[in-house]
Length: 220
Image 1 (spheres, rainbow, N blue to C red):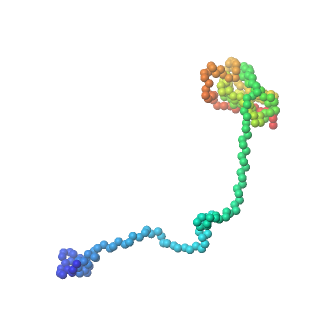
Image 2: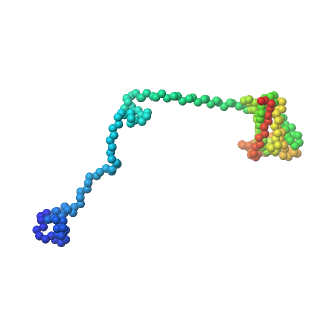
């Protein structure tokens, strides 16, 4: 644009004079915004260049790559083989069988069960006989080596007092004596008449907390 050739109109002339400009073109250039600088990446710290002698010094222990070392892997370092753990022995097999013979005797206040076992006194050791007694349930187990002689009745003929149970080992038998709750109730058998109590249950009834009584033979 040409020079002003006279007084500048309005306040534009005063502004141009204050800036020392002769024409409107210079004024436009002076008032135009500065060009934006080229976009720069965010600052991520001052770059640093370090030269390391030897590649092995920048590789972690055990480093290997097929493209860098060819088809052959580096030789494995001599490492002591771990000690072999001892093979866990298999749990010994216990064979469960019934007692060879059984008998019952009602002696008034008590009912006595006789479990026949030849040479019981010699074969059975300390606490080898375990009787688990509930109010109306009984389990007797006598352990001889890998054989467990077992008797179990989930519903006894009548109620007993578990804490008063006694277990003795005789020459050829194991004797279990139980105190009856109802002294006048005569035990005709060790188990209840299941026909009288209805159909057989899928699981034994709960007869309270069990009491465990032990019996011992002469074996050391």
